Amino acid sequence: MNPVDISLYGIIDPEHCLGRELAELAKISVENGVTLIQYRDKKNGIRTMIENASAIRDALKGTNVPLIINDRVDVAIACNADGVHLGQEDMPVDHARSILGEEAIMGLSIKTVEEARSCPVDRIDYAFVGGVFVTHSKDNPSAIGIDGWMERANLIKNTKPEMPVGAIAGIDSDNAKQMVAAGCDGVAVISSIYMAEDVASATRELSNVVKGKSA
Image (cartoon, rainbow, N blue to C red; front, side, top):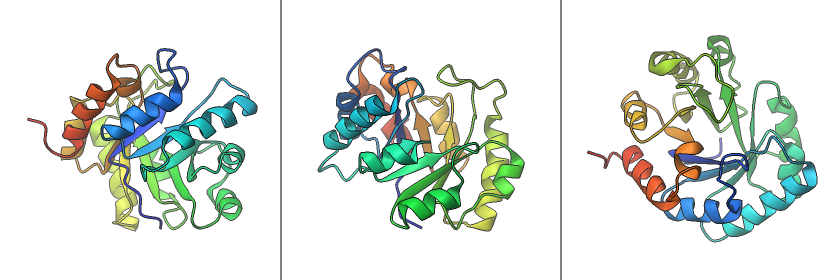
């Protein structure tokens, strides 16, 4: 398992950035506390995705913050990203691992109790469980809430206690504190950082929460 800090996991998405430059937003958020960047793109073709991901990768040089590509193993290879984050309907974890190698960072989305029970903990480096709260950045008709997150996270941790497990969907500076108190290893955020007018300030606020510095 590759060591990875998921405590403040920023998801860069061209549909949720107020039309601003993705690479610049990534750089600002990392400078203010984001520990891992995922590039997620549901609207552009592969050529644009590679260009965007490569620009984000260049912006992160020297920061030691990894770049993860959502879903697309091919884009991760093309832009020399640090790894991929897979959903349950994406390429199987074993296939992705065989292509990218053991050094690649690999994350997995978990939604259901059954998915948590069958989580391939020996082939991934972290998991995100959700959607925890209602969100407008992704179709999320049935939020599982904090109790639902804890149930699924505990199933994963029972199998592999050292596995980092985070929370995703509808996370902001208010409920992030609740997730940390519930034992969450990290929070994944989109709108609460990248839809903010002041990305630096929004990132610092969330970073303080996950570090336990928030009042």
